Amino acid sequence: MNNNIIIGSGEEHLSLFRNELPGLAVINFPGFKPGYSRFLPQYLYLLFKIPLLLYHIIVEHHRLRRIIREHAIDIIISDNRFGLWNRKITSVYVTHMPLIPFPEPMRFLEPLGVLLHRLIIKKYSLCFIPDLPGDLNLSGRLSHNIKLPDNLRYIGILSRFVLSDQSVNENLVEFPHNTVILSGPEPQRDILKKKLTALLKDKEPMTVMLEGKPGKGDGILKNGNITFYNHLPAPRMKNIITGSDFIISRSGYTTIMELVSLNCTALLIPTPGQTEQEYLAEYLSEKGWFYTVSQLELKAGIPLISDKPHWPDGIIAQSSILLTKALEELLEKHHNKG
Image (cartoon, helix red, strand yellow):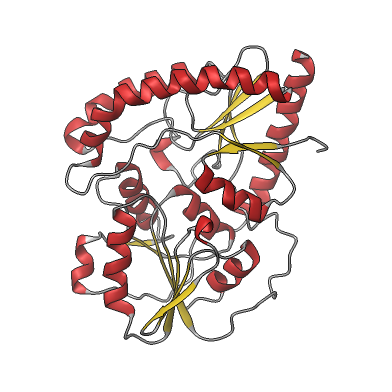
């Protein structure tokens, strides 16, 4: 759409953007890292981090002012970062969960969370939700059937693979294999890696384990019948995933969207204590679109189910229409504000 794009994120993510989108300007602008506890429930661990989160929101809000001045920014798109709005320019907040799920004993607090989130969303010109409206959706109650501000727009599912113009046959992986997609912060990423390595290293067919560490180079390691890749460019990653007999991944929302865009189902293993992932895994397995097992249940082995996904056709086409419409509205708002 003939806009100049600057990407701001923490250094560990900038390495991914430099590889996937070469030539774009980048700014080291790290966000809040809540971290994960090896022992405490995630919701309890996050409660202890709230004062640090509030401090970080204030700091990044003031830093954004300086970035706007230095780089003549006139549109800001914030990926779930609460402080990145500015009244002088057009701003967009992107989230897939206006409702933050709580564990069952604390679910009575969810309306309060929705209210606070709604106040944040109203600070922005628009709120983009990467999902579909109506019953055909991926996020369930996280972004549906709740009272939301008028500036909210569903923009369809997002995926790095949908817009890729590179051939799906580039570096095609033709041998039989299963794929494990690792994601999320430590220590849970490493815990899952060790569990799956122990279960799969002597199994047929071979397993390709994508570690999702773009800052570590494209290193390749082998352990038994498993090949580990620190990082792969999108075309090769796409070929490995779509050529898999079976896929195992976390139930992070980005991973789910990308699997749907590739018409691939998977066994979802939610990060323990992360209520969002636990809900998404349960919700999508009940729909028959994915399968799920808890990390603790891996002791009994991995249920390798070869099956095709059962979601309706048209998700990608509808997503493209919604995204184009939302971006056109965003640019029109910017034009009117200017």
